[in-house]
Amino acid sequence: MRSARFDAETGQWSPERVLATRKGTEQAVGKRIRKLGNPVISLAPDNRLWLFYVSVSIGGWAGSAVNAMVSDDLGETWSTPRQLVTTPFLNISTLVRGAPVFHTDGSIGLPVYHEFLGKFPEYLHLTAAGHVQGKYRIGKARYSLQPSVVPLDEHRAVALLRYSGEQNHRLLASRTEDSGRTWSKPHALEPSNPNSSVSAVGRPDGSLLVAMNDLEDGRFRLTLYATDSKLDNWRTLGELDESPNPWGEPIPQAEFPAVILEKFRESGGARFADREAVFLERVTARMCSGHGCEFDYEYPYFTRDAEGNYHLVYSWNDMFIKHLTFNEAWLAERRP
Image 1: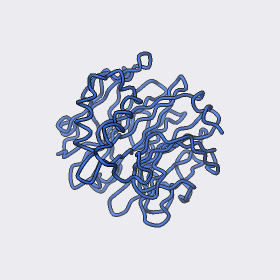
Image 2 (image 1 turned 90 degrees about the vertical axis):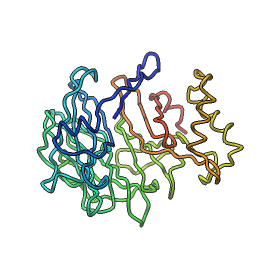
Image 3 (image 1 turned 90 degrees about the horizontal axis):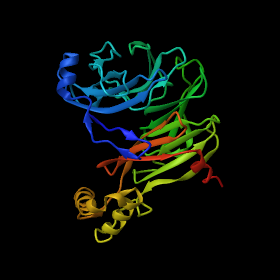
C-alpha cells in the first residue's frame, strides 16, 4: 500500500512511498494475509494521522478485516498495523471505504460495511486510541454499503449509501441523532446510483457536497452535487469527468488520441509534455480494445482542509488516481 504527499504551495505530489505491505501486516497481526485494499487516511483534530485499510486472509473481499495505523508526525513514521476486532465470527467481513468522523469527546466513528451473507452498512465507535467500543447497524435495510457519513453537529449526522440492489437504483440515506448509536431506515434520494461508491463532505453553511456516478448503469460520468442538510434540494454543479460519448459507449480508437491528450493537458499535463507519448501508449493499451476505447471514473474520496479548500480524489480509468482541488469561490461561480 503506497502513499504520496501533496504540497499545496507548489501544487505537486511527492514520489510514492510504501506505507503497508502484505508481509508486514501478516507479521503484525499474526495471521496469513492474501491481499490488502481500501485504504482510508484522515487527519484528526489532535493532528494524529489515521490510516485504516482492509486485509483479506480467506476468500474474497467478504473475508476482510480492518487494520489501523497511526502517525504522530504527519506521516513521516507510522505505528505497527493493528487489526480491529469487529466481530466474534472469525473477525471477518468488515470493510472500510469512507472517511472517519472525529467526535468532540476524542472518540472516532468509522463507517464500515458487511458483505458476508448480505450487504449492509455499520458504524464502528472507536476510542481515541483506536480500540473498538461499539458497533451499530446503519438502518435495517439490506442491499446498501460503503457509507459516507457527514456530521451535522455534535450528535446528528447523515450517511449516504451506495445501493447494491436491483429495484430503484437510487442513492440512499440514513440519519442519526445520537452520535451514531441508532440510525433511521435508509430511504431513496433523487440522484441515481448504479451500485457505485459515493463520497460527501460538509460545508460551513451546513449543506453538503456530493461526488457520485449519477447514472442508471455504468461509471462513465462523475458528477458533483450540492444539497441541503435535509437532502431535499439537489443541484448539479457540473461533471467532474465524463466519457466523450453521452451514453458511455466506446469511442473509435482513431478518435482516442485527440480526446485523451486534451484531457491530459487540461489536468495539468502540459507541464509534462515530454511524457505525452508514453502516457498515450499506456492508456491506449489499458482503455482500448477491438470494440473501441472506454472511460471509467469511480471511487471518489472527499475531504476539506483547515484552509477551507476541498480535495477530491478518484480512480481514473482504473489506471491513475486523479486529484481535484477547489474552494468556495469556485463553487460560487457555479450557482445559477
